[in-house]
Image (cartoon, rainbow, N blue to C red; front, top):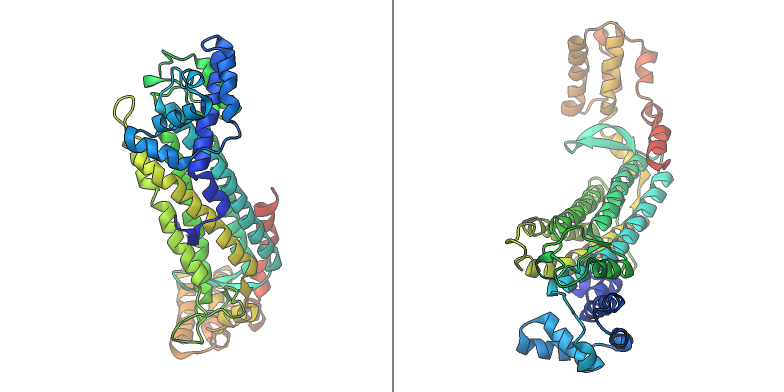
Length: 434
């Protein structure tokens, strides 16, 4: 992933230095377990830890791999250069490359998930703060992009909070799903290595032992993991799209913070564009791009092939780095979002009370008018607002069929905005009580 959309902490997880450090720890812990079983000399296992504080030479490993055409062998050769051939001859006993590669990949994904959870938490905190700040800030709800009925800005933030809270729960489950390791040897039978070695290595590295690996860890785990990231990406886009709509000139109910010195257009100095939320929409596409390849990786030949390898070398870092960046960008947008309550009220009143049509419809039916006739009466007056710019309440008060069923006071009462916010506390309790 390009630096523009990367945060250093997440990038560090996927660096060659971090990867080789994990490879080393897997091998060293395996040596400890082998020594405990009497498979290798204890002093040799202890000698492997001489490299504990050594910075592995990435360029040297690449140089060796250019000859061996095998990354794990290149690493083991370099490790032997550090700890000595006599000690190194006991490293990797009974293991296969996938034991190192798959376990490392899952460790990286677990560490990446911890950063992603922190990003989700920041988004949740921002959404909750803005939800309570604008709990009763009335704005028009829209369906099909058309004015529907009043809601509040607080409820808008609350529904995004609930959605992201569900994503947090999904991400925790995805972390659990991916937190397994395998040190089971060729084709996963433990023929040349005792299962206790796997259990020791996994325990030392914060993983569970994979119940059954066929030389590789089953890729349905990874499919579930990346699918979860894809869902979170879609939720980010869902929020970003709503905020982009709010910033449209003819809406302008909210807008991204526009900092001093910021420029919106190289040609038009007046422009203040929703560049951050547009960027989030694009980043969400990149996150979702990993889902289908991860699903296709589930199918491997027999006990193992490497058709998944090139995919995961790409989507592992790219997807987690992108989503990490997107979560923190979204949190920043919400934290600094500029909100215009007066514009919200003006937009709601743009069609002169039209959005209260359902209340009038229900009142007529409760007054004894059958539903078909009630709908006809309300729609007849509503169309005058759409087509002639009339005032809805005024038209209702002038309609003898309406006033035959409802008194002027009853009609007036149907335009009370407070009616639409009376259950906001109930909804907030459902969303935020946990």
